[in-house]
Length: 319
Image (cartoon, rainbow, N blue to C red; front, side, top):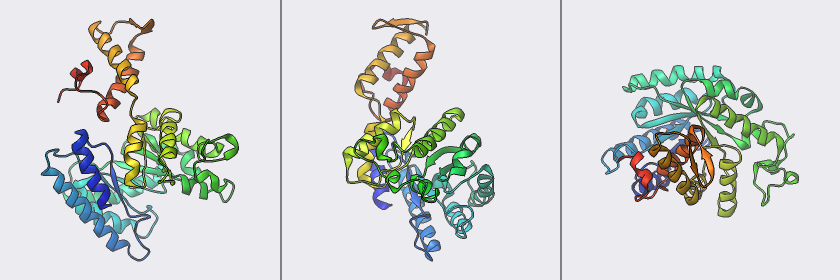
């Protein structure tokens, strides 16, 4: 956790913006019986990192979250009271795992809002949700529609485990080719269907879909291929990492390529000069429908420091 917070600060300075969140984990990170001590450590880390960011040249760029225990776990209330109650101002969101329905969110929010209010936070804490069961996938659209939910993440390993052996262990991993017969996380029909249900729900309600981890964290080529597929084929906007070494490959895979940025800049700048009337670029007709798409490419390029300082589209992103 400390290494991740340090890397976030370093990359914020390098990119001029915060390019990834750090989620301090209580659910899988706390030893059984040590949940209270772990929650206190998370609260201290979050508060310290946030306070340090306020005194840095890139004031306010830290994005620190906490993943608490599931709402039906005995440690949930203790996590919330300790972490939100002590460090609510430091948190960009709270992640709730094992959510199966909107009712789980409403139940969690009662305690989260009470703790945040007691800590003096005046703005509502956004909620990120982990979709980890067939029932959660069934309710993905309703969950994404909740006004406090900011993002849905896919919990691959719990999702596979929730099927009682009906999905093979190979679906928790990534094969070299992801062929249909491999039955990995990019080819097993039930897993792919769940991922698509999550991204479709997020896009329908303007929320962010976050892809699951790739556990083979030493295989950078496999990670990069998985991240590109998650972004370009499945519609995810973000991806989880489980090791600091995975951050840069994921950022590179989700960022637009240089030729895509150049094309988007050329089209958007030409459209702006034409007062957004239809135009022809390289023999292709473009109008407001395609302008919206290429504008989104420019936004992603700006967020990932892929928009060069001399690019004419920089005029749309004043410092």
